Image (cartoon, rainbow, N blue to C red; front, side, top):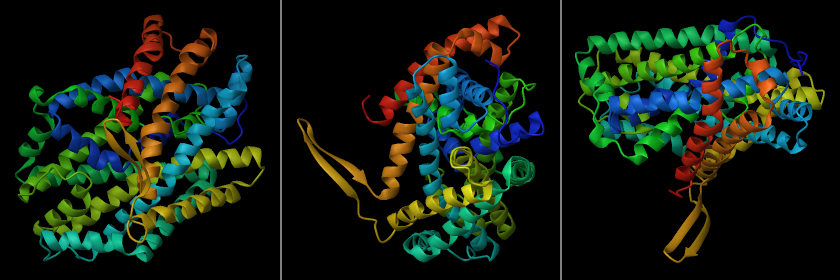
Length: 463
């Protein structure tokens, strides 16, 4: 079977695909989560383990997902149906497309709310709202934002509208033009912040925090955390990479472009750490703040540093841009499906996806204020009782990150590694080196599924 005919168009060049896929992968997690967990789990030791996991899980699954997308040339649901039929397999493999598309859509609904915080903080930073605040004042600023559903709803609405505008314009005029501007701009802002961090006098402290190997901190949990980060950081299992792969032309090397995306994603995460932690240390603040590092610790640092208004504004613009490039990729699979199956125009499809995502996101908005009391069930077990539930945001986050995405990645590996014919895989992947293909194929068939399954078990607290 040859690749299917184009439906939505394709990227104008391999570089644009790399920018788009990197934009999908680079998001809020890259800016704070990777540097934070690296520093707290052995620094350079964690980075080495993470890079090994990227080679054994992230890169193989990304190549497989891009390959499926380019071979099917449709939305993830229709791609899986078409490929299953071509391979003589059950139509139930179409459920893999549904799983990815639904996961991406649910993530979009709450991701838009969190990204709205970044937009709100662009305004705070630009109007010098951090000036004169102590630690308590910065914490109150953040708490007041979360406690106000109307402000959260405004920023959520604005961010979703930006996504609808880009996605409604199509592949060449919308997605491509957005990533052509946003990704170079994101990298430029990162480099400006790193340059400032170098001048802060504490760059060496930040560098050591990230890269000094401390193998005494490495445990089994550290390895599982590195596996999970290598998988989740690349936007795998949510249909975004599959749909972007469907717009990749036949001449581009899937292996080379995927490797470039993985390299760029990792580079952005490392640069973010090199930009953030010297600023934190220069202000005498603690680095181990998790999500609060962005919205509490850093604003306090910007309040104390020279030119804090400028660099604070640049940082939150950077954060907003990273969120924007990720979220448009989350909208694209469902939008493409409505265009294909419901014959909607692209603007109407984008508005429908964005509108429903916005409505579902209202539940996340209220999770931080009016509906902040957790809901769920308490199960009585022999070893004690277990509460299953939380706020709407908690449940959506847990369902997608811990259940749907690992299962999506696992079934991608199983479909390509065990159900597609070897000839189909070789034909689409187009690797000229036999030994590289065999290495990738065996890793995809054995190491990647085992690694993802372990991450899944860890995520649901079974190991």
